Image (cartoon, rainbow, N blue to C red; front, side, top):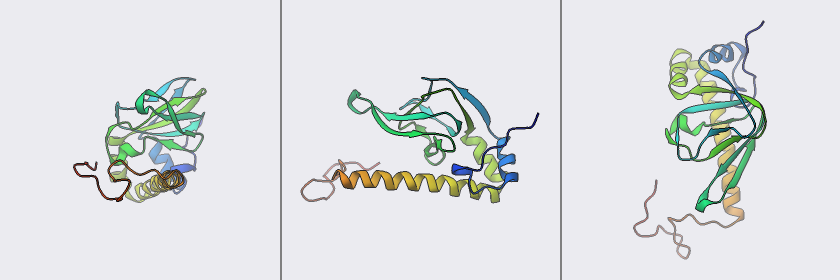
Length: 166
């Protein structure tokens, strides 16, 4: 029986076979079932997940209503924000079908970066690519819907007095 090797897709696309094989030992496979909540909005989140199989819905709950942000599938990832800004999850991620994730604790990723810096650069480049794509998509939605952030005045487009940037 051969050992599972992470696929060369998504955030792992810049990594060679040896680097992915090494990374594999820092995380673990997680089987999922339909309806299973993987990440809960507002709860502590310290894992990066790579989708090996299955489909996962990403939602937020502003003002008590559910808003779907994205659906992610094989080769994609979620939880990557926690690598750079640990804290409560900004969204809920739910498995839509039975699937399989490869999960990596932030502490284990940091150790991998120390142990394998060249390969670590490749995974950070992959994560950067995903985050950039998501930011561009969000900016396009903001522009198309003429959404003005709450810390800006609608008339002057200047910061509203007393508003806090986070």
